[in-house]
Length: 66
Image 1: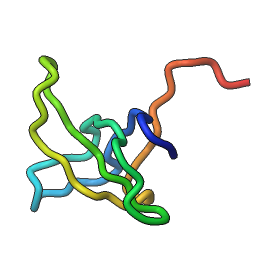
Image 2: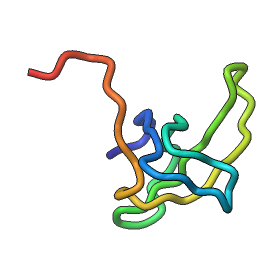
Image 3: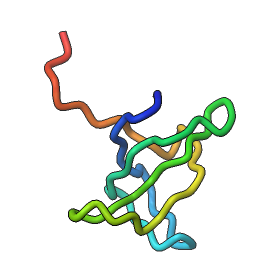
């Protein structure tokens, strides 16, 4: 995973009001295997930003993978 990857949550994070499948963008590498992810609405307004371990994220891909 790297900066600006679009990711999805692989599990609920109810303590932050987030559920499995919500989509965010990696905006910072906080530590090995921990990324700050920003979640924004369709208008681009952020509604959550938090550090999430890599094991709880899935990178979304829009391109063909050979």
